[in-house]
Image (tube, rainbow, N blue to C red; front, side, top):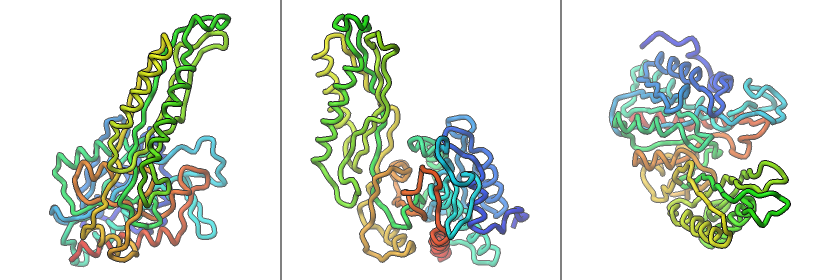
Amino acid sequence: MPPAHPDASLSTQALLARLVGYRTVSETSNAELIEWVAAWLGALGATVEIVPDDQPGRFGLWARIGPPTPDGIILSGHSDVVPVAGQAWSTDPFVLSAHEGRLYGRGSSDMKGFLACMLSAARMAAEGAARGVALARPLHLAISCDEEIGCVGVRSLLRFLRERQVRAAGCVVGEPTMLSVVTRHKGKIAGRIVCHGIAAHSANPSKGCNAIGVATRLYAVIEAVQARMMQDGAEGFEVGHSTAHVGLIQGGVALNIVPERCEMRFELRLLPGQDASHWLDLLAAGARRVEQDMPGARVEIEVTNAYPGLSQTHDTAFLNTMQVLAGGQAGQSFGAIDFGTEAGLFEEQLGIPVLVCGPGSISRAHKADEYITCDELHAGEAFVARIVETLRA
């Protein structure tokens, strides 16, 4: 065994405290966290690779403990967290604070709690090998960056895994589900609609074409798309249909000028398996009608980001095994969630069974005083411990 890392004996809670202390807000560097995790895993004897992302200063990480066989299990999580600016925290969000059984800190639920469990799983695997009980199948750890801005950073990590021909029996993405096993989630299309008009003096607006007016008609198109989406539903989701949403709009430069440009940012959250091009075609057709109805109007629609849904609806030995290890029963129905994760990309890019299951609750994520309970963290630790035990046989 390599020499012990100075932090090798940290408990799962202490590991979480260390991880929360790294300010890995999306679109900023996560280098310090990744370098610390790489050193920690390397001291356990893991094979570790730091994977540079396409964006400078951001990195993914892949590690393996056990033999290089294709029948192991991947535990996956993202290292980034959402910003805290403008939120009224009761404690320092980047210092883990314990109070009445709760552990407060940015990312404690989403999802550094599972990252801490992943590191504990690696230690369990290494300690077993030191006692002569080595893994028969490998444990893989995959840590990404910039998940919170649309599952962006995991793409370079998945490209690395494909190039290295890393194979596995399945993957667990540890987003907070209260340890419920989830096999379906929605995909997402994010986009920009730029509405062009003709500038004019506001004293005679009929000589121009108001780009904000164009945008209001496009908003009506999006509402019509939403109404159509509501006709096709699926069981198991809290919102049982796809959704269309406009979250940002900006147009005009001065009150006395007919605006010649207005931009809207929209997103489509699609049920797994739905054809994104169908909905985008409906938007495009609506834009063409608006152009025809408003002389001088021109509309551009651009997709800025997209990731697929997860649709592991079929039963497999892997999914049922994970259901039991997470505390459920074999044959029990699997869950569905409305928010997106990297699981759909793992399924699409690696072609392996993927599920979402982790400690904590998404209802506490992205807000002030985010927390995970001590009991939830311990349950997550027990879950990954049971996964490690299956790899010994």
